[in-house]
Length: 343
Image (cartoon, rainbow, N blue to C red; front, top):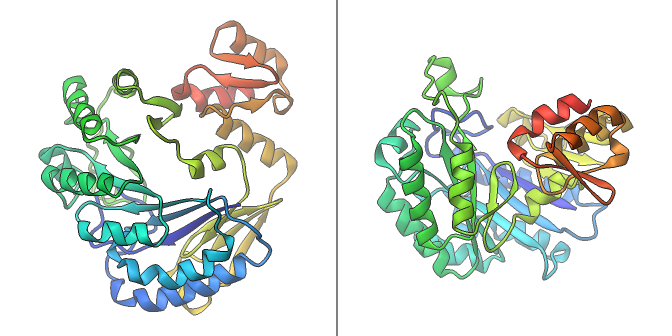
């Protein structure tokens, strides 16, 4: 079982962000964590072992490591030596807390750098600078656990040279995993409401892939590149494993049901156990397996692809390949189009 824990607090909200995050509720963090613990205990009732834990946000390190101690006490009996435990971190928060997060049992850091360029960070409305980001990454790596960074590309300030320089710096710092996300404007974001669109007209995704591969990073999903480690948690989603979501607006998929938690902060605090359930048909699950599998090295079982004539066209044109009984996209950047074609 995969476990996602949502921490919605941020000290500021970036212009492109449409996630369920809050900048004015940090003084309610204690009561939120109390509700979160009730939610966690309830949702873990029928679970024996947790394969991966991902603490995401928001900005989980707006809270102190000590704030998580009771949560980890609840989790202790579900964790094994092989459990991957990731926490998302923003580099503007206290770097001295990194060893304390490791002491909790966390064994993977995912750092939201987004860029190593001052002007690009200002464009994205991030509240750190390159120097702070570099120092934070260096301190994370000194902790001796897997370290990943997030980067954003396809802004109007990007070009082939600037992206190459940023990725060269990332590689020189010694990170073992890079997630590269093309800038998108979510309808819930400030960029959208202010009609601000700083997106580059032509994508640099292929340049990024080439650069990272030259540094021995392997693309194992459309946005994810691994050098020393892959994200077991993210791979679990693409492998269509069941997952539990805890916290404000969190989502779970257990057997034939998708379970939604409340999106309103005060409603969640009042009743963290209230849920909305959606039944998933076998057809729903088949289509989801195709969409998730083709965008990653997981691939799709050929039995899930009903339209064999369309599949033959993709195989003949080398857009997909068949290995044993599974189908793989040869270009993950085309995964969505390939999936729609095969529907």
